[in-house]
Image 1 (cartoon, rainbow, N blue to C red):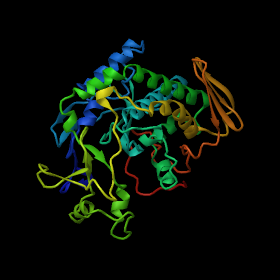
Image 2: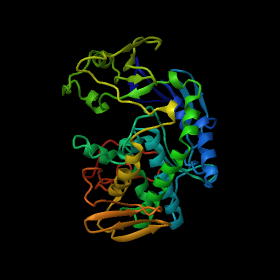
Image 3: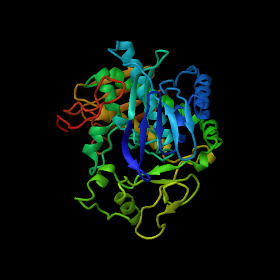
Image 4: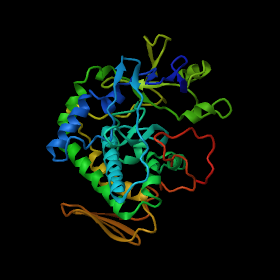
Length: 389
């Protein structure tokens, strides 16, 4: 069964009974989800050394891959629905959400909207919350909203981001609103995971840098949203379409661009065999590449402090609700929901504070519609939103 958009000379995803064939690199998915991934081994070792046990990142299923440079196959994810959760189960899910927000923000993985996420229990009964597609990685992210798990507050895209935010997948289980105890559990897991990743940054970076094919694996670059391309014939986008975009649209494709780690330029495939590439102009009024995480230098990034401090308030703001009031503790972490201010007291004794009105930082996950808020492992296709934003 063919599914998804057409890219790169009419190619699309093909879903079989056991395997999903993808007409693009699956390197980044293999790194995060592969049963034989060196990054997964490094994450398990780091968690075990920290006393969390080797399964702290088992919310990522271990899948088998068949891969080449430009295409690959991945076995279909097989999970069971979560069903109704006990109080303990809700706390377990809150931990998984916090850890996933930290991990994907730290690795610079983006495009994690709810259509791209599987949620269920694995063969060993472990709770799994993981993406189906990973094409954008190693981005320098300053906030977890940039993963699209939490709703970005950018005024131009705020409504779309609120609607599509990946964490809305967990609302049928954690409730609307999420209870204060579960929210603070989520925050504690987010902070602890960021700290763990920073302590083991060198080993994790080496596991990626030494992975076969790392420097040859395309990292997708999105110049516009798919919806802009779909509307392009009737609503000319701004800025105007580039020649490389027009060429791909005219042959029936959604334009696809990519970059390679350590190399300049935004590239695209220039022939049907995908053996030749073109490159967008590097000078003039054209899209420019943002820096990537410095994998070869242990993932050093000035954005790490922002992920920890502003990121905490992005997480709190996304799930905040008028029903939350007063101090809520999880271990040595405390969050106080004041009338106008949020105060976070870290286990170290450090105190962080921010106004409770955080609409300029993050959008709320609570909407009138229930799109994405399903109890199935995958989100079924949505044809029309029946609620208000």
